[in-house]
Image 1: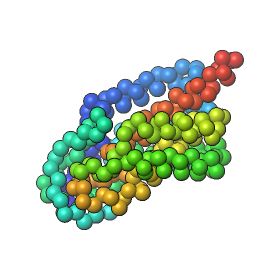
Image 2: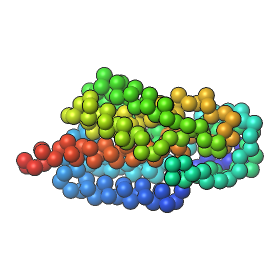
Image 3: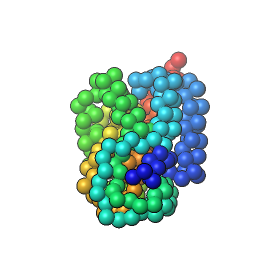
Image 4: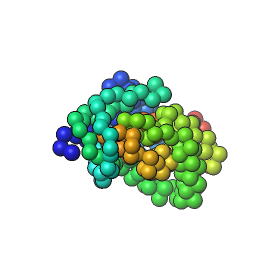
Length: 238
């Protein structure tokens, strides 16, 4: 497995640049009064929120291998397009197994921040319900893609989390959106589909990486935006 490079961004350069632009737009909004209060409404400070988003994006390059799955197929370097988003397949010469990895930016950071938001806001029951609903939806639409692994449309997690979060609690809609969007996607799209990875010829199956990272990252941005709407009345009265 020495020929396999595990460290690579999960999306191609144009989409990576788009995510960077979105991140800087959110950072600029947080610098303003509305989203400053929005991030606080989520249970974190503005700097913590921007740092978490930045680390999530930058650390999406890092995949931590945790297991090797026997694989009969050989994969060639390629870019796989799914719902208009191009995902990077790492360069590999021969592949005796699929590397099962955890993406630092798409799994580790979201999990840690989600757990913090759950404890900070006391959202134990609401989070369990929200995550279960989003996970069920993600599981139902996630598809095995040859050469890539498990993938799903990027716009589904954000849309589902907004509906679920607002339906369960308007007061805690923002943290619920982040928690359910991150954990629900990881569980529904990745963890529950681990049994479908073998046979796809994917050199790396990264939990929270290619196929789901963009959905998780966009969900985190949507959660911040959702918080801004939830706090607009508070800001207007200052």
